[in-house]
Length: 182
Image 1: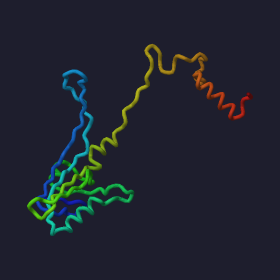
Image 2 (image 1 turned 90 degrees about the vertical axis):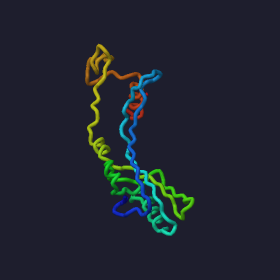
Image 3 (image 1 turned 180 degrees about the vertical axis):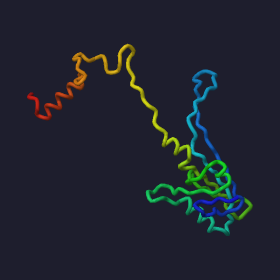
Image 4 (image 1 turned 60 degrees about the vertical axis):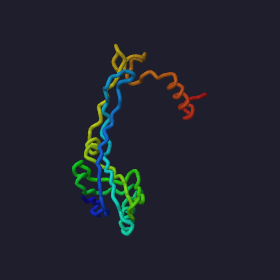
């Protein structure tokens, strides 16, 4: 199995890629034994990668760290195009390094056991959610009266009655502006 990030092969032995899709939900049972859950959406898919790099292939470790530490012009993490069978099966196309990179020395081998996580960015569900129109908000009113009615004694819709606080602010505004004498 191979893993390519922007066309550059991640070198190492025993490469294993584990894909994860986290589905968020919230318990709606309160203090009851009800099993209802509220779906809160899909979180970005992640690829957990593990591999072994022999000490003699130190350049491979240096190259991997260079990929992990790469940043874009604004200081954000570099966004990589990923090529891997598992990533393709999960529909992951673009990733960035997340949650760090760890390397420990193998007990009986002269090699590092390396693990890192790649997190999906700019996924199809994310793009769809960004294009989706916002939910329309309906005007709310008290029972028995239409929105905009009630509380207005003047009967004129152009000059609605102000609250006490708004009247005080109006007087202060006029005083500061010099249009009212004290």
